[in-house]
Length: 133
Image (cartoon, rainbow, N blue to C red; front, side, top):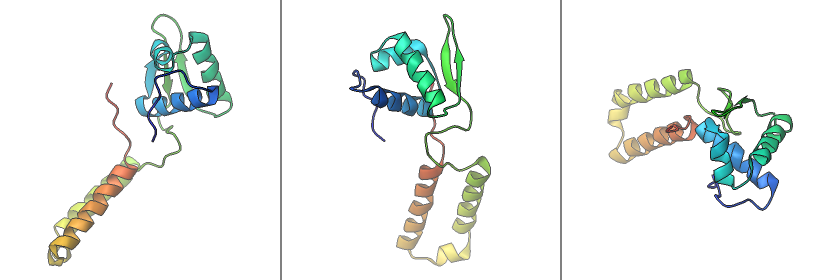
């Protein structure tokens, strides 16, 4: 994924795409943070959020006032498929069973390494990102 450009975007669409990416990663932010990141005014951010809700159908929660914030509803992510908690648990269980199985032990070191890397890549690809707040 491309990094969020901290300079003023050349178009509103690019800025809104950046806001979507930012909200997908962080999940909750303050209006002031978005105005600083995208170098635009508060009314511009509010207009962009209106467009994201109406046109892109992004489920936003908005709290106005001095402690105002914007958040996305749980379950919304930017066009990415993630494992559910049950699917992630299943993948971890299957991984553990394979590692403790005679078949796994019968594999060559290279095959075991490749299998382990493939499972790890699946976890990385489909696990929800962890966002530090």
